[in-house]
Image 1: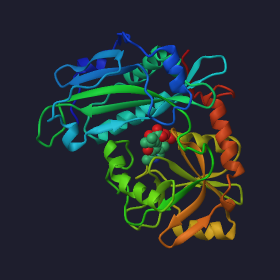
Image 2 (image 1 turned 60 degrees about the horizontal axis):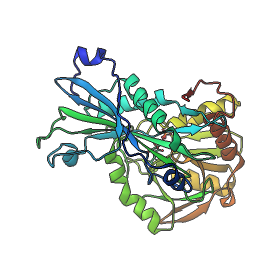
Image 3 (image 1 turned 180 degrees about the vertical axis):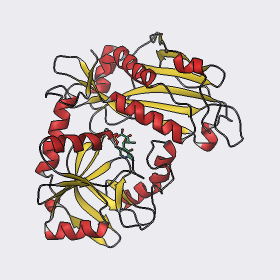
Image 4 (image 1 turned 120 degrees about the horizontal axis):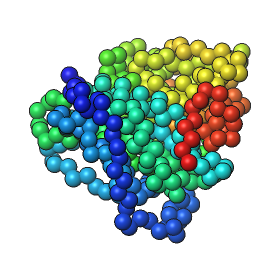
Length: 370
Ligand code: PLP
Ligand code: COI
């Protein structure tokens, strides 16, 4: 059972105390770090932290210098992996300001993840406030051009206790990392490996939420993909081992010769915010989108017959990445001759233009911060 927050903790509007870093990175050092940040290796000067105990509810909200957490070796997170996270980005607009993309959707998914993992729900307003305050204080770290500031909210179980039960104490934090492209080649087509030995999620499991354990369990399959010369792994369903589900950290779409799109239905996959946005953008332009099961055999047949024109992966980190080649133990096949297709690249441009504030935002997805 998830710990039930007290009526007081629910009502309490969290006010973040701001304690700026006393020794922040110099302008020169930051500029050097922003030249080619890669993905997730460079971090800003601050973090947001909020603590939870059963007795006090959510409390002690702070923006402070990024630092280590002191963790007791018996802290619950270290043993039973009671942990959830999110990923969203701040984008620099041409006028120098910053946009967040659908932070309310990340806040909602974080709450859903917390519920599944028997963790206390963080008020969505506190999630958004933490993200916004962190972007404000570390605004100098938002890269220009096609870079962005990747924000990583997460919650860990911090009670010192070895019994298997929901922790009574938690730490919620947000850290920020200036990033370039998730894949070294930018939006160049990626190759994917069909995992036949490993599955990602079964019905009733945790596939639909963003908990760290899902990613730990995917690493062996991802290593197998790399061993076979592929960029990413794609998982099949855990029951029939036929239906395409998603990649290790991205959803997947298929583009057909009649102009329609399809994507695997929700259930055991992560309900991606990029996936949802692509469905909306495609529908805006009159493109039919089906959320329906699609087998790996059909994928192979449709690629060979030309019925399938393109496939692409999508997620916050990866944006939209065309899939050029699919490999499996039984052989490999190309999609669209292995080149990036026009539908993926048009959707990518539409999405990115909204995120950076270069195009109208008809769905009210952008939260303008600065
Ligand atoms: N699927 C998985 C397993 C992921 O980790 C992610 C990334 O967060 C996605 C899909 C895409 O989700 P989103 O578009 O919300 O980033
Ligand atoms: C994201 O796209 O935000 C992800 O979380 C994918 C991966 C980095 C885990």
